[in-house]
Image (cartoon, rainbow, N blue to C red; front, side, top):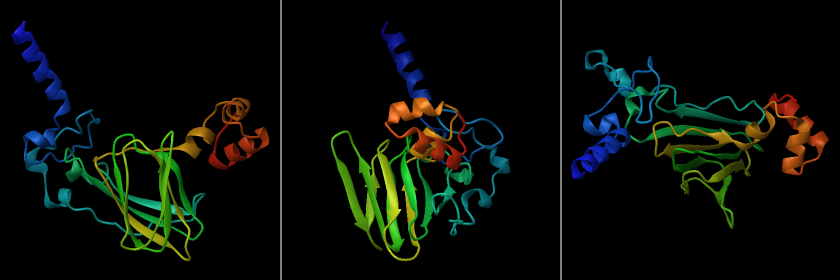
Length: 209
């Protein structure tokens, strides 16, 4: 029985240990599907220096519904991050713009302000933790917490983000609620929003029903 327990333990560990933790690195082979422990490793003979360098970490286009842009350097953009438990992004928010309420199910987020003013915060069932940030300030958003960022200053605001996962994932509350085909009446009933407002938001975010 003890041997069975040991074998079970090793089996569980094999599912939780990333490829990179048993090798020096594991550049993602993006031609095959992702797995719970990350992408499979690209053959060593096919790895080049370019796999460890990300180009284009520049300001994105903020002309959209949120007046904000995120330039991501996740594993799908930057294969060298695979299995390393880290990724980054650049955040640009035009004056009056915002990153709406959202979560990252797979990562803690660190926000570093380099330009402008951003009011940011996260919510728990019993409290709100919010702060107006300026260049040189850093704020952390624990994994899975519903959080937001709003440009409350003059001109564009810019920050850099670090994540504790190569692929942090994101769920935006506005898109979840209003870009689906759930009947508007049900959305209104479960959110206590006016039906006309729900329909207006569905039209804005491409929802149906």
